Structure formats: structure tokens, C-alpha cells
Length: 431
Image (cartoon, rainbow, N blue to C red; front, side):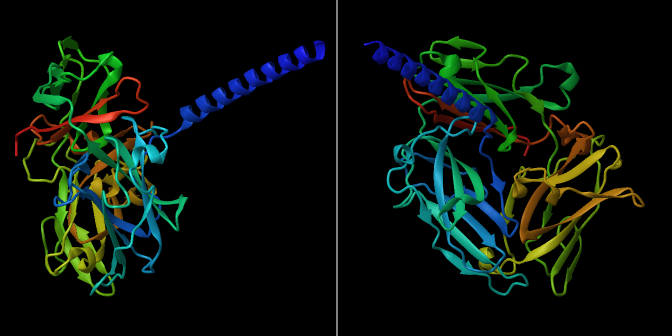
């Protein structure tokens, strides 16, 4: 009996060590895991659009179980047909994987191939345009919530082409919001404050501080969003978020923009257009607006639209152009760096959209390869401490017209995932 007891003791000890090791590795992997985001991994893939069908440029959000669809379109400048696939992965409110099996959150198949593509027509730069819309017979999300869309090649999910955040809504929570002046006297001329309340009605909510989270975005920009974890106070089934110190953010400025719907003549903010073996568009010089008074102008709140005034179908007959940006920043490269951003490049700061500095003229400049359309953009300043902010180059005003999106996430009792259970968009009303 002695040897049997000893063997059992060693076996238990081994299992405890193994369990502890697995738990440790899980904690390490989770700690270093990066949330999913809108990222483009291949430079030859351009002009990626992701929106609700019938409303180009809209937030890619659909209602669960409805006939609404999300459209994904993009160009491949390699001009060779390729085998692109896509799938969805369910995520939590912070865009980390929910760690569910695809069979749990997808009703039919776990991936689908993009079979709809067309060759460009009458353009200097040849490309192939791919497009797909879903839910369809192959891809149907089962749960509400955040989903990351992955497009990859040859059925290999390790060969990711790009990712996009999409939203599936099941309205179970009501949201009401108002925009008010900042409570802080020092920021009253520059900031906008959002007060809101959510009402979960008869939903089972055991702990409002953990079961419900509200994410606030300005102009659908998640990188400057705010996650509200706990309400200021609770009144029955209503959660009130109106503390003087929360959801008070810079109003920023109206976006800069240029109109490249036609390459045959000049248009707003375009200085010169040259057409030879390629299209070259030179924009007017931009100035630092940090100390300028607020000036109203119409914009698309950071959005972009692929459009061709001279063609019939911008998806395949809109051409590409080398677009030159130049900025008089009243700063030098010794003080920091400048990036040009908008929804067209997901507001990401990469080498491809970083401006170079010309000491002779004292200006920052760069050239981007963009498809015909209308583009909103702004400049981001990154100082020597690596702090990124648009206000040092764009300014901030309480008068600025902005859209605010409120996304309410709910974790049902005992569930391993979060649902997107409420949504509201409010506008400052200045437009």
C-alpha cells in the first residue's frame, strides 16, 4: 500500500504544478494580448470601406436578427486575382476576444470566401475591387456584441490582410444623453461634456458597476473614447452618469477636408492637379490652427467617401492619385513629429502617414496614394515624450460640431460574453 500512496501523492503534486503553470501562462498571455483594432497589414490593399448597407460611411452597426447588412469593399493594387476569405470573432467591450468557440456565436459556417470582384476600368492605376455583404447564408452572427472582422488569404487566418471592428446590436437598454458646457471654468471654451442615463428596465442586473459598461466615442473615434465603468448614482433601474469630472473632453476643431471627386478641374482645398502617367494632386498649404479663433465649416466628422464625379461606378472607375500635404506647423522636427490622419487610415500613426520636415521652408510635408473621393483629415502632433495629441496643431473649441456615440454593454448573469444592448448617437447641434 505504501508505494501506491506515494505514487498518488506525486501524481497530485504534479497536477497542482501543471495547473499552476497553465494558470500562470494564461495570465501572462492575457496581460500581453492586444485588443483587436482596425488595422491594415498589406500596403497593396487600399480604400477599405466598412459600413451599414445603404449608408456609405456609416458606423458598421446592424440590429441582431434584422435584414440589415454590413458592406466590406476594398481594392487590391497588385491587380492579380487572389483568394480572400473572411470570418468574425466575438469580442468584449474592450475588443479582447470573448474566447468563445465560433460554433457558439456563428449560426452557420465559420468562414466565407469573397467571390464578388471586378477589374478597374479606364483608370491609370489598375486594381481589382472586392466586395461582400453579410449576414448571408454562410456568415450569420448569433449573439449581439462587438465583432472583429478578419479578412485573410488562401484560408489561412495567420495571413491576415486587414481587420475591422463591427457592431451587432440587440436593443434591451434605453439611453438618453445631453451635451452641456464643461463644468471646469478653465476648459469651458474648449471642451464639451456629455451627461447621460441608461435604463435597463426588467433586465437582470446583479451589480450595475460590473454588469453594465458604457463606452463613449467622439465621431466614432475609439482611440479617444472613454469607458464608463460605474454610474454616478442609481435611481431604480436608471443609471445616471453626470459627475462633474467625467465625459468632459476637448471639442477639437472641424476637420480639414479636400474634394477629389473629379481630377479634371480644381476643387475645394486643391491647388494643382497634374495628369500624365499618373495623377498628382497638390493640396493648398495648411496652417497651424491651435491659436486661431473658431471658424465654422461643413465637414464629415472625420469620414471619407469613395466617389467619382466623372464616372458611373466609383468602385471600379475612380482613379488613384498621389496627394501632397504640406503644413506650416510653427514647430520643428527637433520638437516632435507630425502625422496626417482620418478615418481613411483609421487614425493610426505609422511611417506611411508621417510627415517629413523641410528645414529650408520650415514646413512638414508628405504624399499619400488615395482613391478619388472626399476626405476629412487632421494633423496629430507627437512630442518628444511620445505624447500624441491633435490639439497643438488643430486647436479645440466648445462650438465644434461633433457626433457622440454611446454604446452600452451588458453581461447577462452567468454569461461568458458581453452583449451590445443599447446605442445612442447625439450631435452638438451646431451644424
